[in-house]
Length: 179
Image (cartoon, rainbow, N blue to C red):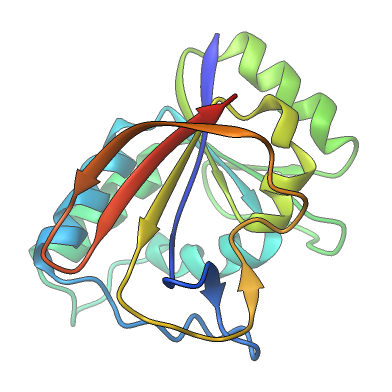
């Protein structure tokens, strides 16, 4: 049985992007990026909402301007299977499956049949499958956006803090499980 995890970077006031939806927080530094390379490499797969998938899929093709860490992240990302929940996409890229029907039923089935850790990517998707999520990983960055898309797109479920992790001098991770 898979462990379903929802983790995203966010501002101190709880937003994952600004009002325009531009993900305006700066790119992570080398220590934080190394952390995310290791996290992605450890996942069995990822379940994406459409918007996050569209942001991530530029990693399908290597870019000459990338350094070694970017190539390593992209290779880890390409290896893992991806499931993409969308009502508007007609197709998805390599190693990805489009979820058209009942997202909750599909995620429940994946959770029951896949071993390892499945990442849920996107606040709207996480809100839709919240009863199935086993762990929330909140990465706080030292920025205040004031408005935008919140980490919790729906009602915040009752949670219990089970861990803290200082990723760098700029980023702290809080780990919660359903209470």
